[in-house]
Image 1: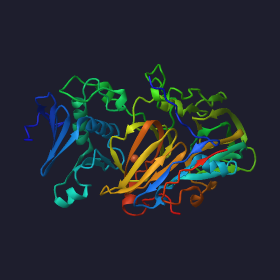
Image 2 (image 1 turned 90 degrees about the horizontal axis):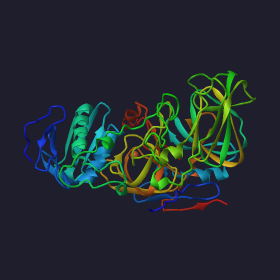
Image 3 (image 1 turned 90 degrees about the vertical axis):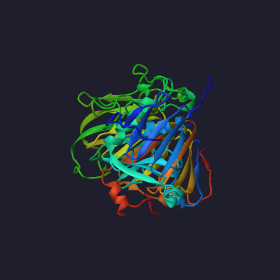
Image 4 (image 1 turned 45 degrees about the horizontal axis):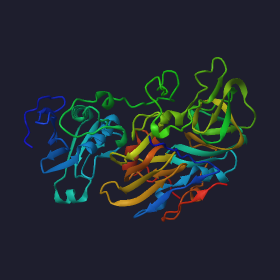
Amino acid sequence: MESYTTQFGSLKSYQKGGVQVIADRVENYAFSNVFEICSSARPYERVVFGLNQIYVLEAVRAEGHSPWFLCAHDEFVLCMDGAARIDLVEVDVPRLPEDKLGAVSLPNPPEGTPMGWIRIQRGHQALLPSQCAYRFDSATPSVLVIQTCKGDLSVERWAEICQRTGAAEEAEGGR
Amino acid sequence: MSVAPVVSEETGALGANRFGYQKFALGSFSFERDEYFAHIAWSHGTHTMDVGDFLRALMRDVAWGFFYGYVHFDSVFGTCNHYGTVDVFAGTYNSNYKRAGVDELQNHPTDRVGATFVAMIEDWTNEGFDPFAAPMETGSPYGPNRGSNLEAVRRARSTATRCVGLDGDAPLRTDGSGYPVNRAFADVDQSEPEVHAEPGFEDRVHAFNLFAYLSRSDVTWNPSFTSVVKHSFMCPTTEEHILPIVHGNDRVEWFFQLSDEIHWDISTRDTAEPRSRVIMKPGDMAAMPADCRHQGFAPKRAMLLVWENGSPKIVDEISSGQAPVNPVDF
Ligand SMILES: [Fe+2]
């Protein structure tokens, strides 16, 4: 039987595809690559690379300890490269207003009840439950994607992360 | 094709032809299959499709409940979802058919179209042919009526309401539940995340292996919901060979390539003129604008995260111009 090798990308090694324009604007596709974004992002910066009205997908370079985050609604995190530990705390205060969109960072470690911890690696996805504080920790640079709403911490720099010319520009990256 | 008296009011079945397949009527459209082809006829035209291609397209339309927006079976025939009613059309989004006035569009209650399409997929799919499977993984769709494959065509689409694997939500896929790892993903890591929940927090400290879940998918080009934030739906899917339909958007959707490679042909939504090609490799992200139609090609089974906005207001917001057809302005 034919044997197959599944191709994944990583910070160390990724290949980018691209948009080949026929009669179009390349910007319509907001084409980017999560490993390229996270190669140059600051740790735990939440770089928006998918946007649909109030909803975003954020690309996050995980490296060392993150701040503590809190969000009024559920979020989900998917690990695309490396690994990360997630600590969860049920906070006493402050609860966010129910309609607050996106995560906020907490100035101090949260006071509350430890809920447990999770260790995810490539391909694993975790729930970041509403109104619970969480913190990431990653020993080596890793890549996370967060499903959430656009909020105070969401960083948009589309012109920098997206393909700008219509010819195929197949890039390769990594160290 | 002359229209015989309707045998079933519910499905529009007209009785079997000499190949053993039911003929169907839906408004002014009629549908008949022979050994190789599906034949569609309406008041001003006729159309022929390879029956394998037709059944693979029909299967997606049925399983997705007519999906978001337009499901083009090919450049002529398709459906458009109005969430309660469905347009069934031929040539409407093809400029020459339209110009010649040989196009047809009829709107019906969703249940009416659904009943006919479900009866058709069940009657026209032979034993040994699975319209959800990649072509290398299934038998032939051709020949006279030869049994059925109800188990395959009645698969329910997995739709988590919060997250796959939570108690009471969509279950994980395992060998035991009938989801072995697919041959193309035999090398995908099956480890589970380490989850350490303090007593009382087991229902909120949750993680699962999404790539392992996808490696065990037994269908192609059939997004399931795995995690939900308000109306933000993660709809990952495994793709191999050709998307059996051309999807016309009524909203922006996004593609995030998790593994391997998919090539997309993008055309104008209403007239099918080529706009772009998009080549996607692992880690690539691309929006599909709300005014495009698109079809994907996956040389090797690939994991694709389709990311949808299921807001009930979004179609009106886009069609009225309140929301842009391109998601980002820069
Ligand atoms: Fe689509």
